[in-house]
Length: 436
Ligand code: GLU
Ligand code: MG
Image (cartoon, rainbow, N blue to C red; front, side):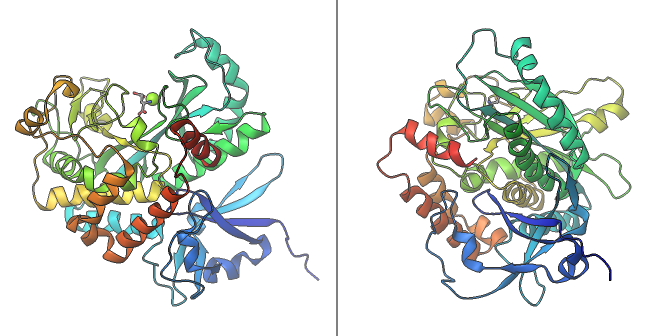
């Protein structure tokens, strides 16, 4: 008799709430489960980050399958080994479910490729903070803070490498107990898979070292935010870069210009997806080096989209390094929805040949709304409520995501907001710090 392998494999979905949820099965059942998946319940999509359930059109009805993707299968080799895979939520007939975040990101990437012939290369740059840290002068980018974290950081980077999330750099960021980790870019939805796995491993590894990390957009209303910057570049089908063009002052190729034009035109309408918590809007304020306007920056860290620097004068090397980052998102969002929203908006920019505004050269917070408008800029929604209204009335977002998704998403977030009623800002931050 052959011995069955009863070690568990966890199959996960990073859902609308940006939370990793899923089920497990014995590894020995892989052949069957990688075809059929495990059962999943439609109303799970309305479980908020606080585990309340928002209004659901499904009630107690319906069945779905969460199907592991063999390409994402990894073994997490911490104290207790765990097999793991990201999954897609499918209907029982095998079609992508319209509320599956991973399937939405895949569709956005595929539609973009069909439109432009370009493959999206992206990388999610994460900031997080250790909770309960007393601010210590000299810790901003400081050696002492780095050294404090070195023991867990080396185990953490080893775990990321083993999981296929090639780490790039690690540093002590500006804020109290704040660190930043960057990964090498990856194609298509793999970058979002890597982001979901990175967030999971951050908690998994650091808690074994007695640390309590949080990716919440901001821990203290009076302190720094934890951003998520998504870096983009494009490749053609033989792997040649398409992002940079010699001659243009900022180096943007036509594809890049129009993609950025689309992102900036629709940023206010997709912001509720990229920055999806009530406290996200404490971070998206001027002078926090996050994003407060629909502006393009040429190496300016107060811009929603920033052209990043390259370290070469050789055109071939510039073309490979050249990338831009979207700085308006945070880690309360599912990386899949962030990727989907940005690529849908970028594709619309390409379709309509939308030009971005010229890079801002001044402090936009000093301009009146009229002066801003004259230059093509506007303040982004300054609350989740306003961002949700912009999403609700967005014909564009309804076209990309579907009416069903937009309405369900808004209902989800309204249920989440209801959980916070009556709390002051520090208490709201504390609620989010518990879950991200
Ligand atoms: N902490 C800033 C943010 O919330 C980013 C700082 C930086 O890395 O430039 O996005
Ligand atoms: Mg940073």
